[in-house]
Length: 212
Image (cartoon, rainbow, N blue to C red):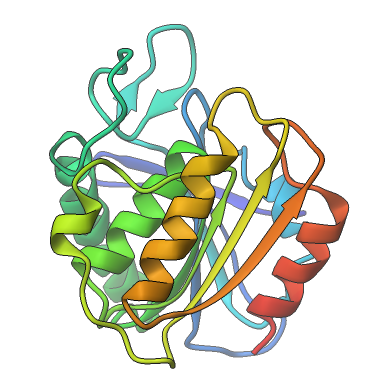
């Protein structure tokens, strides 16, 4: 995919314009140790009806790549761990929208692993701004239950996970799906016999989810 590398303030990102004029935006959030290049492997099959924007997370990871939280230890990420990144990401998004004349008042977001946690967190903190959220091989941060808003059935959530995932247990994905359903959201859940990745079947389902 012929994406463009750019910077805005302290953010580095890649973006891809839609094939036809559109004011819709799809935000792509990489996982721990990833960067602005990581999510395009998923996006190859996504509909080209929206701008696609893949920012680099703000914190260097310990080994390589970047992280959506400043420190990654054995304790699962909490809302407080990731709140600084969430606030900064929205500030960047609004600035990018002004610079590129793209409406960012509402957007769709797809995240993988730690990026899925960020995607889910954005949908909880800013339900009016996130139209669709897709969490791939991810989880909801600790404390999500405390701020879970009441959704109507128009709020659509997609969750995909592997039953053999040793990095993020499938139970955490199932729990996230349960929480979203209890809050009133319409959840599409895809589970497959894979490790910390997304199956071909779930990728096809994700492309369909993003199509409208």
